[in-house]
Length: 177
Image (cartoon, rainbow, N blue to C red; front, side):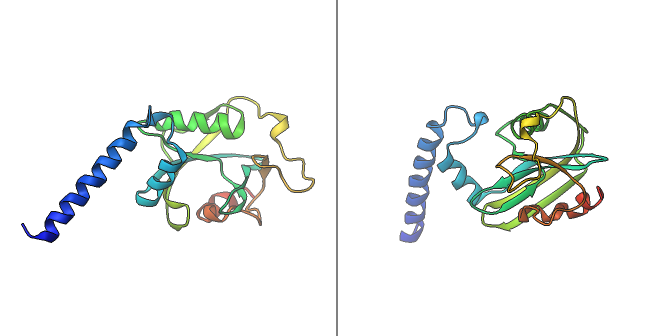
C-alpha cells in the first residue's frame, strides 16, 4: 500500500469516527434532525418530500411561504423523516401547514425531481388530498396586503407569485382555472 492509499484510509477512518459521534448525538432521527445535520444532509443526498394537492371549485389550496430562498404561494408539503411512512408525513403536513386533517389518495399523482436549487436536491411526490376537517378561519388570507407566513388561500389557476421552486406544478395548478 502506498502513502496516498494510507492517507485516504486514515481520512476515511477520521470521517467515519466524526459521523458516528454525530449520529450518537441524535436521540431519534424519526423526530427530525438538528438544523446543522439537516443542512449537511441536504447538501450531499436527495431528500424525499410529499406535497398535498387540494383542489375544488374555488381553486387549489396554497400556502404563503417566505424563507431565505424565495417568497410566494406554494403547494403545502414536507420532507419525509427517517423510516416514516408516507401517509404519516402527509397527515403531519396537513396538521402543520393547514391546521386540518386530510384524506389522500394511496398513490402519488406525480413525481418531480428538483436538482438545481440552492436548498438541495429533492424528489417530490404529489398526492391528491381532500379535507376531512374545516380549515381554521384564522389561517385564511383575506386578500388585503401581503399574506402572513403560512397564510392559506384557494387560488384559481397559477398565481403570478408562485414559489419559484414549485414551477414544475404549473400544469397541475393551471387545471384549476
